[in-house]
Amino acid sequence: VESERKWQRVLLKVSGEALAGDHTENIDPKVTMSIAREVASVTRLGIEVAIVVGGGNIFRGASRAGCSGLDRSSADYIGMLATVMNAIFLQATMESLGVPTRVQTAFRMSEVAEPYIRRRAVRHLEKGRVVIFAAGTGNPFFTTDTAAALRCAEINAEVVLKATNVDGVYDADPKQNPNARLLDTLSYYEVTSKDLSVMDMTAITLCQENNIPVVVFNLQKEGNIAKAIMGEKVGTLISN
Ligand code: UDP
Image (cartoon, rainbow, N blue to C red; front, side, top):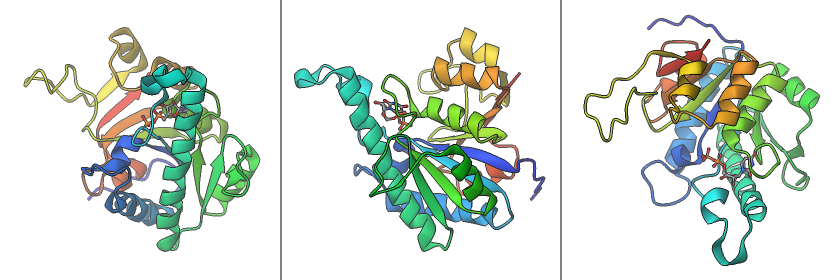
């Protein structure tokens, strides 16, 4: 195994869907355990890992807005609260493996988690703790992908590692086109101009403006998270 270590500080984005695994339940404990194991293995090597968790396994604001009087902003706040549930579960699993982990929320829930304080988050990372950022950006109309790009820029992490249920970015929809090819690399421009559904425009342009590479990879394949964090070739790399 090549173990070329490229990154010193990474931002791992775990979508809510990924946490659900194959289960109909919201969170599959086997998934949180496999994420925690792989993250634990790299933090032991001194790589600093911050995590942004999604909430789509529990609630997506955009798809619920308009239901029975629920306006978009309220729906989005429910979505952000969903990410906090995922974060607490993942934190518990990480700590069960002996990895000190802090959750920081974008809006205050001090009984449950620390508020987001940038310098404190960085300090945690320097001390070898994993930091999980929850509640997205704290603003409705945004996504946790945008939160991942934003926090990555704020804490000077080098890369956004987007863990999903697919192998990476294809040149066509693999569900519709059997000849769809998995792309090794891709430019930001290609993502935005071809409207490839990698992450939303706000997130991808934030990465582009700040020169943050994005790696899209499949977390269902064992070892992939650790590989991505170690800078080994997995999935699709998006950069300039
Ligand atoms: N959300 C939001 N602002 C943010 C991040 C998330 O309003 O900065 C809400 C939004 O309703 C979203 C939900 O939280 O649908 C869950 O996040 P997301 O859909 O990004 O999770 P994922 O797709 O990664 O599971």
